[in-house]
Length: 111
Length: 115
Image 1 (cartoon, rainbow over the protein chains, first blue to last red):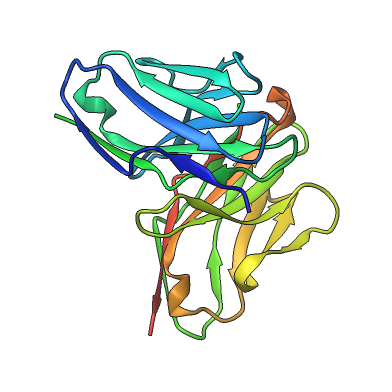
Image 2 (cartoon, chains in turn red, orange; image 1 turned 180 degrees about the vertical axis):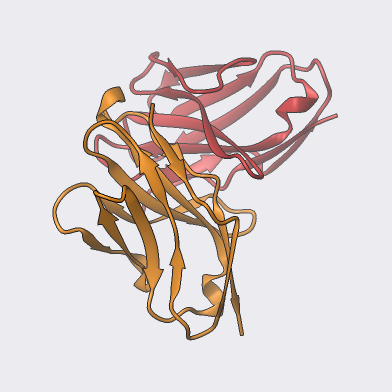
């Protein structure tokens, strides 16, 4: 089974802080994704990466950046956290085919 | 642009009755379609997918979905609902315009199965 591990289940940070969310996968998948999930809005793609050091903007990249230095690890960075970034963040991976495999999510609160 | 609509925020069904969760999509070209389920405080779990071939797709836990190209729909069905099916269900689509790299999700439908 594919295992996608997100470093924190719950995280509380303050406005203006730099926040790092980490995602690690154990299946050597090429593609990794960061989504945020908000009630009534479903999942929205923030960034994705199809290879090490490669990244592509998703639908809502503003206020976020990503890093993929190793194939198994994909980090989401909130450069200066704001209250409107309070959300559930989901990491997903997939190989060349489908489906995507998701982590259990990080519920992030920005105070 | 690709999009998915799940017209019902919530569906309630009695245990043992058939259930349907609706999904329509919009995409240029041939779609890849997916259903995922999410239990509280968990990530999404894959249920089934349509890529090509038979329009009726069978998936995990007794779920199935029918791809209808003319109606651009991909409704999720199960002949007999269980209380344990109560969860949040997401439909998703991926299209050729972005090389099937991006997957767009619907807003989710909360299924409640009443004992």
